[in-house]
Length: 629
Image (cartoon, rainbow, N blue to C red; front, top):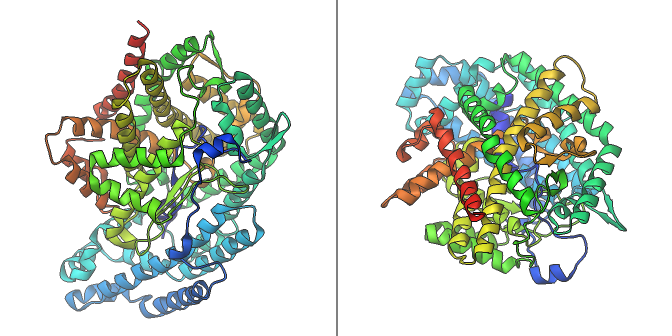
């Protein structure tokens, strides 16, 4: 299994999540009056995976996984080509079923270890569990590498004949066709095995170092020592002095740890370059495009359309916001400041739950029913704790179980939208699970569709119920900011990654040089209304997508523009949209984006498609501008 395919599966198994790189609201470290308003926050119950880290069930499955992987290798290695030649009498279908069952078992074990670890990465026992399980799962999956490699060495005609002759094997046609797209980049078996086994001490180890470093950081704001998420949250405070102090605290701590973050970034960029060179990828992002099953030309068209729209979107909006805040120019720490019109009260967890489920129910009762399970059955971990993973994500685990959602909730309007976003992922993952362990994972570009659509449903529902002009303005402004963060900011992140990985091919980058690249793309995307003060040059250091999934970030812009167009179709549809929408989600990874969007009359290969999505953001800014008249 090549790196591209592995990244696709891993990303869907783990951090399908919120748009990193801008603050997501989270509770403070101590219980306060605000926390009392928010109410009790749920912690997830992982017993549907395993009763506990030291349970007999987990120990038994760890043993069983190793034994089954060894047996699978012994039974099927070097036999697949001959089984294909037997046609209807071959046993490729049986092999596929056994392989999928193993994938489900291995995924269940790894999901559990990952979720236990995410709940507190500072706990040595949890870190050891995660490390030990990762090593054992890597050893088990190394026994399975031959399967994809051998299937890809079978001639096209023989594969096609086997798919037609054996109904069981034919069921997996989408997975087989997907797999064969990796064929040009597949290496000799022992090299693939070396890459796979060394990932534990290579890329995986550097990822873990980043995670444990970032969660261990503390940030001094006045007399308080805060965690990362609580400090980021202050960048949304109504008090500009608190925002300034939070920004300075972030810069101080990031600078103190900059050597570590720079080393991690350089090492992982070089690791990727080595892999890309061996596999024969031409462009630095081609492996991500392959994993996302999206053409380079489509992503290039998206990035170009967004860059050209900077003046019409972010530059224009932030100039308006500066005036609203009584400033000629905003400081970088004012970018996510609330408007004077924005409500200052916290939103309780119960109200957030009701808001999102009502919005989902207004679209389709089935959507609310599925999302409701996450609350009813404790599939959500919402409270902030020391050592807990920052941000938010929805983890699909495996089809034989169900997804889980991680949040850090503080009761801000953005937190409600984050809840809507992650539950959108969760609904998608539940529906796609019908495809089974091999075909449920969705390319990242389409994995963001349901999450962003869930946000749009929630926003439109709240906006429709708001009559007060000042509240409406605050809501529209918040939505515009979220869309700028999702589209403009993420494409800027993509451009930053391109610059870093391109220059890394000529040698290591210093912390100062990475900071220069960061400031150049940020200045271009944010525009002249925002002044990037001293300290902002190190804010690249905390963004996990750069570390865990290089070039992931454009998927957010892809998803937002796609949803803008999709929502317009929904608004103009007489009937039948919901059925088409659920069919798209159920498809999981079985269809290309062109096939999934065709029923809606949408085509991502058409350059005009991206302009339609961007025009929705522009229209909201027009509406805000009209309010000033």
